[in-house]
Image (cartoon, helix red, strand yellow):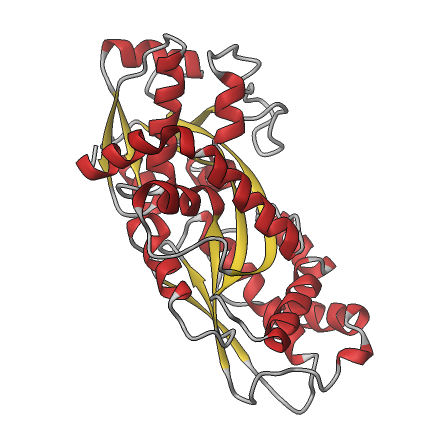
Amino acid sequence: MNLIRHSNTLTAGCMLAVMITLSAVLPRSAAAELPFRDGEVIRLIVPYGPGGGFDRIVRVIQPHLEGALNAMDSAKKVSVIVENRAGAGGRVAYEYTYASPPDGTRIVLMGDQGAALQQVALDAQFDLDKFTYLALVNSSDWGILVRKDGGMATMNDIIARAQKQPILFGTSGAGSGDHIASVLVKAMLDREGAKMPITHVHFGSSGKVRASMQRGESEAYIGSVESVIQAVDDGYGHMAVVFARARSSFYPDTPTIFEQKVPAAAAISDAIGISRVLVAPPGLPADRAKALVEALRVALTSPALLAQAEQAKLPVSYGDPAKARATVKGHSAATIEFKDLVRETVKSGK
């Protein structure tokens, strides 16, 4: 099956590449140090449904992490599986992982923007400071995808059209990262006097939003640049703007928010984006945390994974636990200014 889009499995050749890479980069001293029991199952939790950016990158990581863990101890074999736990913009998965037994068998790929908003503004039942941070997986620029036939080629076109008729923005749910991102963009534009009226339509997942755009039920979507590649490739979506200072390698022909001279460009670019981090429940024993941190370092820096991620157009930029924690802390601080607005938005569902 084609790994560029939705494959859940590796070919035999890819698996061989994983094992060759691991034998080259995993230190021999790591042998017999795996603190997990033989046959134990580790679940990589995806906070959204299948097919989106989170799901795709977790499915790339899964076999490499399993291989790295098993290379630590030839006398044991652990399994790593992917589990989708969608709901409430990731909150279901984050709360589930936070409350799970601290044994390292539940790891969630957390989006720092959404998680920070949920804690700061939505009283989520977790504390970002107390998660066990394992690795930074990647950081993504965000932008606005519009229907190709909607007559909105740039962000300024979107603003102008919205002032005549509110734009139908699809989201993956009230309180989700993409929903809140559109609310924050609107608020930052409003502050500069550039009104952008929005009507939100919630669909439950980013994949369903893209399907809704094909059907004409929504007109625009704010999300990570790599998560909407399929919509552009399929011909019905157009990337109108990227919230960054440099053009995206995925969309070299799309001018940035700065090039388009959009009001509040700096504020939007700094606030709207995402870093994905892998975290486990609080209180993870030091030996299990150490094993997972090392296995993830090996997996996320292996040439085999990086080549596969590049082919699939998924950014991977490994960072250690300290860097992962720092990125989350930064986004948490950035949400404080709009705390009341976010609370009211989620409460009303609009």
